[in-house]
Image (tube, rainbow, N blue to C red; front, side):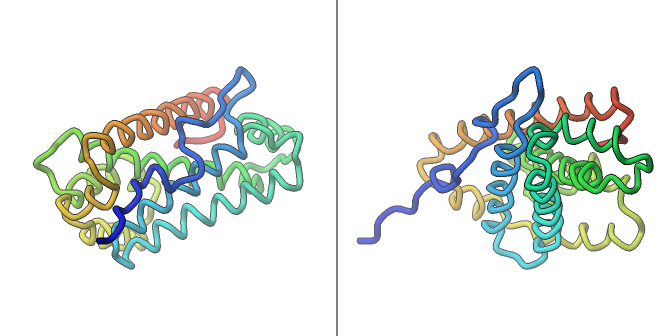
Length: 204
């Protein structure tokens, strides 16, 4: 008899619930680790259409990691990255880490909205939930060339009856973990949205 598959949340190395948040801000290294683990959830979708989403998230994580490696002091928190680039790089378009963080947070907001809509609406399929999530996050930032690519990915969402079991069993244990993970992610995104607005860093 085959051994039971481990739950998704037992396989990830860092959860958003474990990211340190202090008065100085959100710990960059821990946040990136958690974001990297979030990308793995799209692997459970089992459709190559989501590679575009995975690549977008991973590419921005890589850029922020590069900044942190080169600037360990000013890169300690997401807030310190934003402040350092604003102070040292006059043109907003040249602030590479800020731009990467902006797009990463947008991608995380999209993912969290899609999953939250689906959890809150048990009769709704993932494709409908993620379409609503896209329209409430990334759509307004995408041009006419990119939108169809993402809409195609939304249509490729698995049926919820196939997806949730892939997160592990029993569902009575997995769903509360998913809800806690999502809440922690959404709290971080909301915090950063406020930081971006207050500091004039752009819109998430």
